Length: 101
Image (cartoon, rainbow, N blue to C red; front, top):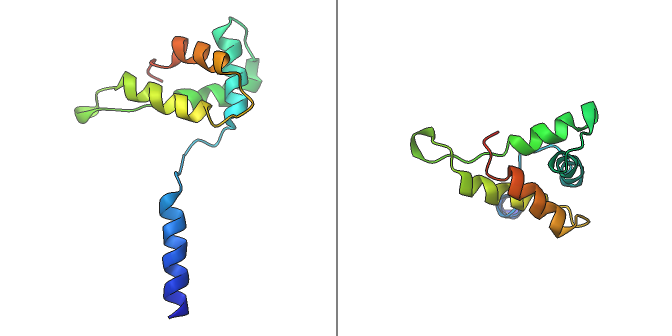
């Protein structure tokens, strides 16, 4: 009985937690993508952060790219960095938010 209760509790916790397959730190992505949006480059140090940002894509039926949903997913991911300036996130998203990765 105890095992069933514990298993049910763990299942509820896991099911209620959003799982992202993005290993990059959102703050690192904000920093690197802001540099890219303003014309600067972080060089090799930012490659993984940029790759993580552009891996966030949404598709409609028949594998057609969905720019609106992609924008929202990227916005949610960047919003996880509480230290980021909202204007910086806005600038990143206005330039790269709807671009297919």
